[in-house]
Length: 282
Image (cartoon, rainbow, N blue to C red):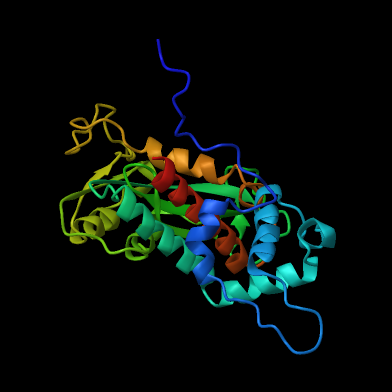
């Protein structure tokens, strides 16, 4: 009989109003300390502001819906600080730092990597949105992501919902935020990436491609013996699981940001949280 006193490694339910303390301890140094002027009201603490951003990330509410007494900071200050941090590339640095922390504690599983995408509706429109062919041509955005064998996000990219997945395999591979080793690596993808140019680029980057075959017009229905298609079990489920982790946050499930840079910054913050959980809890 299992010991009931054994502590679970599964992370507890995340608070929507406060960044986890252990995560904040790892990323605190990347946030600038507020300058205290001689006159006027003291500047808001970075953690208070990040708590407000964290709340918007999880709930998907409007920035102006945040009350001052919730975090001790006005909504205008939270939004202004978010824009400033995004312009400084701070959220990219936070994601990169969490990937390095994950690499030190658990070691990045480079052997198998998976790529996939997910469309999100964008009711407010904006740049880098498009008519979603799977949602009655409604406006939407798309998240492209590359993960390691455990599902840690190594690279993320956003486009309109009408963009073809195969066009951004190159951007994901070249946009990996940590240094790739030269050891043998396998690249797993679904039928959307089955194109000669993707196969060529993946091989040039030192990968062994495992891209599910898409049957062409007039091609026999017999299974096509693609090398590596049947010798190995399916490994694409890890990227689908990571995407499901991301869309638990309502600001990612539905794109409410008109600016694609703001939406990408929120996605990077969410990816940093996922990488931290994988590093801390396994």
